[in-house]
Length: 307
Image (cartoon, rainbow, N blue to C red; front, side, top):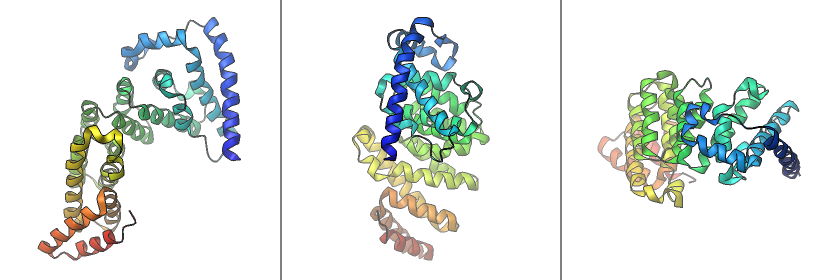
């Protein structure tokens, strides 16, 4: 019943928005899309879509109002923004990019909770489309003055989903040069499934600060998740996946004895995601040479893996 109610409200709001959008198209010439530096490459396309399909912009605006209304009612659980927007398909990509690049907390009229939820959902929805036109906008969030670590992490994740190696390397460079942004970027790199991301995360585990190491170990589990590598979307990068998973398993097994209790738990989870059987065999090989009791404990944990 609860989900049906949400869908009824969404449909009602969208229908209202469709009516309003026709009036908007007639009365408003539209914003200056070239005013946002991260959108200059698609400014002409945005203007064309504004002229031809104003409803797509209104759909995004209505979804924002929906989130705002839910927050004002005190809903403990706000609507799933990415699910709502992705239902509109690729037609909403450019309006979403405009909303991300041109929106701000004050102008939205939202409270901080609703605003962050809305913005994170927008960015996630854009990332799911895996469209290279989103790269400048997403990179601008990661590298810019975004105050929220959560939003920077979500933007890193979204950019990683696009799969462009150069853009992933770009955010890695931001992490190397900006300690204040590094942890959020590291936490988001689990969705950047190119070998360069795995290699950087391994470096963080070996050399980083404690909170960064925890984030990197978790991200390595996401990166090496063998279920994801079996999907059709990852077939193009299959060779990188095989090499990266071997790297992740080897490093986490060899580093395991040096980890403390919290890190050992995270490493176990990540190794299970990467492939419990492969990780167990690697741990058994290393344990045979070193005789380390910690690795025997790891082997037992991997043998009991539910994955």
